[in-house]
Amino acid sequence: MLTYAARRVALTLPLLVGVIFLTFLLMNVIPGNPFSGMLVQRQDPAVVARLMESFGLNDPVHVRFWRYLMGILHGDLGVSLSQNRPVADILAEVFPNTCKLALSASLLTWIFGISAGIGAALLHGRFSDRAITAFAVFGISTPTFCCAVLLQYFLAYRLKWFPVSGFFRPEHLVLPSLVLGWYGAGSVVRLVRSSMLDAMGADFIRTANMKGLSRPRIVLRHALKNALPPVVNLLAIQSASLFGGAVITESMFSIPGLGSLSLNALVSRDMPLLQGAILLSTSVVILGNLVADLLCAAIDPRLRR
Image (cartoon, rainbow, N blue to C red; front, side, top):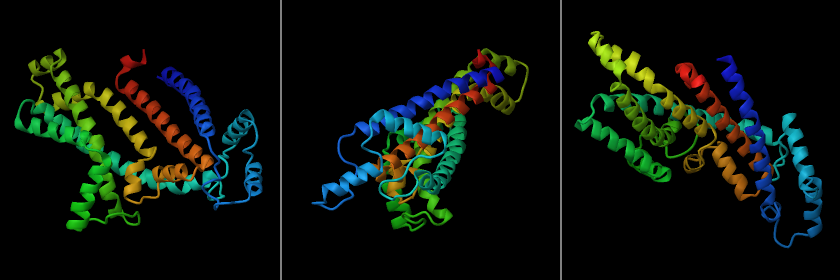
């Protein structure tokens, strides 16, 4: 297991370096002046040139990339052009909000997705199975913004059960968590259902039935254990994606998180801030994939080969 883990970590490092390079390249090939949207019209070109020089934007691309890479190794992600503050400090302020949203949505996805998927598999062919499957398909196919608007209108505006937007009290987490969790749970339900159906039809399940094992023991200790590896992989990737920032959800519910910060940085052409947000998001996703691979290998030793 340690050899497999070391090999996976060694493969992750070049991927992270490639993400840093591509992110920097894409941010620097976008045409235009990053200060054009921040200054008033008819601004003195000398002021713009002085700002470009002070932020080092007139240097060649390879010089800026090397400076940016060395800064990352020392924990320095640059200075925000719009806020004139270190990017690392800004990310440290908003990332905990995204973590709270991602954790609550992931918890909802895990609980509902796994339990509903197992129930649909055990009730295969019945009305309950079709109802759960239809609910999962509806959650996958419904756009995030549409689901957010529906919940805001009915649960917040009409019934007044929850606040429409904001991020000040625990109840502010309910609606955005439902939006993200519903979408993620749909995929988990379908995967758990199909994996459980494959496992329940295997030879070792028939052998367990002939041995006289109880139904809960067969389902939980034999079928579910063999159906878990692809489910764990999906759950880890989904959770990492949520930590990376849900742009639409955070924007619609006025959550000061990583997603809304990235959108604002893109609109204001704040390239250092946008680079830092993308780097943090992709790093979390890569780490989530690594954790998923290690968990799957721990559950199923065959994957280590």
